[in-house]
Image (tube, rainbow over all chains, first blue to last red; front, top):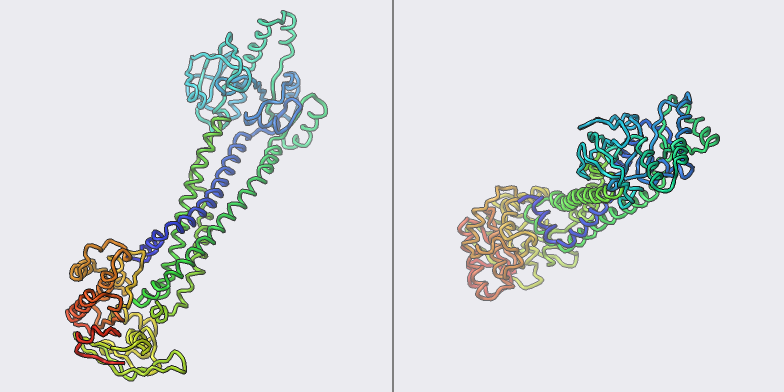
Length: 403
Length: 208
């Protein structure tokens, strides 16, 4: 027998009231915690995949789409650009490196990216087994691809046209797996990398088997195209001049990932702010619910309080007993809310994995959630303290005599 | 041992209660009879140190308690006085056993589970220890409240109309148990009632 046990018994005795208060707290805390988790992990994913990429060039269109398709591999590409234009950029003294990307095919939903050795190098990818692609139609695959498709070194597979798993197969040309990357916690994990030439060879021969003749095929080969190129600058000053140069003087479009991502986060921010406001409101209502149910139960339990006072309890002791009831609800609500947000994250991660091959699997407690805990405790204490102060005004003799 | 001298109390200037002096030795019992409105419950609350008298003195265990602060009074009440109310009231969220142990806990004493079980056996409700109090009948509830009052080995047991809501059979049983157990622990038993059924059972009587 102790105060905590009495408080707990009282909560159990009023199951529905306690349930309602806890449910509201759980919802409020769950939503806020889920927002914190998603915010942090989305930003982490965004920043991690962005590292070192100062500018992306591609076909004219939406700059955000260009960034999403080329850096994060989630949107459709804007179109193709001539390789020669990209090579010209390489000569620019401001430019440190250019990584060309060819996007357009997939295998079971995993994108096949034509590029050069600079791309895995950029992500500091290490090989788990095998080697890097060297020749046309050789591939090195991310670990999620290997897990998801069961491909092993030496296996061959046919890519499908487009970015959806249901596209037409390039059945006559088979890719071969040369190597598998170690997990790199970047977009690389979900990609199949191959040499740029594979994409050209594949689509050139495609033309041949259909209606193009030799000449056209040569012409085609002469006009080599890529989808986009990731560019890093030698010098931050380039940020001021190069994007404008590209936009004005070439057929290309330049997009700055940092600006586009900030814009994207701002756009999402409106939704996130609304949700956060809603969650705070729910938490306040939870506080009111704790207040009302304690206030009501205290009216009913007035005699009990007087009885315990007559049995030698001090008023402070009873006050703390009632305070514990609010605190217990807060702690339960917090724990349930944190669990709920993890469940939400897990569900979200499953969806994101299915649709975009991205996963969000960091379930550890965030520092902000400690503050959330403090806030929950504060709400519980405040909501319990207000009605419980009545214990200090209770007239023992009259209460005992009345009933 | 419980003693009072020249106790007076008033809720408002029109109505003044003047109570007869009361003395109840250890192991003895005293019946205070009175019709409603005569201040029976007021007197009991004065003796139980729940109310502060306008004038007069109360001795509990041969200690004069005037001038004690509320905290000290609560301590004396918890240690030395067991109170049984007209209607048995409990902390409804707790089980019968926990309600009895609560009396130890609030008096800052060791929680004596063995004594609770023993009292439950003697008072005949040992089957109900884990039940909630509102699952018990009136007579059973009143026996539990007697057991609760005995938990801390008090030197004074005060009972306010303990039999008014009981039928004859339960009435006899509850009074017999009260007398038996208070004399067993050597406590003074003071029963305040208007219940005429008790008149013949108590040799020492005071009429208000």
